[in-house]
Image 1: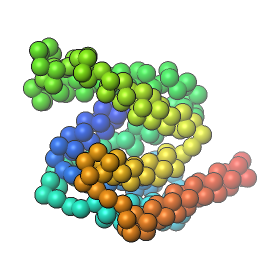
Image 2: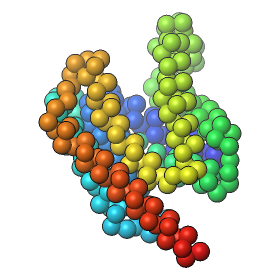
Image 3: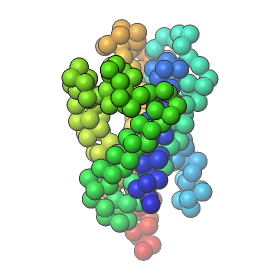
Image 4: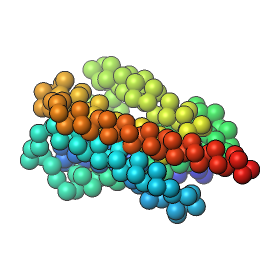
Length: 244
């Protein structure tokens, strides 16, 4: 059952985030979808985890650093409230995915591929059904872009292979592997580097962004935020081991 809910969270994460890319700028989409450290901190009291000042300060500083770094990217008329909200929904749902993964990997010792395969498969099926029902995608079509199985077209296969082996296997699967030993909030703060990396890639491909003074200011703040949360988690674990 937890694997099913994890797949739901993953499908909502990818669905809302990809949808946001069509309704807001790349910068805003990446900024809001990587704001999950603040979501994790907000959920900690609900799940019974103790929130320390280091958690709060680290998450805020990390998010602030990302915001400052992204000031380097020029704004445009593509930014919309609904697009930003969809990206933030992606941040909220990925927290559920990370927390379930953490529980199954650490508490139940579920092997990473035994966990990742059914979750990814179910999420893909859910997204396919969602695309057919909400976007008018056809089950089969001579136009690959309009078909649920258009990704099997020879022109799309190299890109699909890259996304599967790169961000998919080396990205999310590595995250799931790390969740056995690392807290979700540590992973979340580490992932906040995505806007900077995405901004660089966007600049390299489209030339619409550049890196400069704001990134040099925001980048170190992101590192400081990540280090603060990591040290706070380390102190928390050490205290737990001492009292146990």
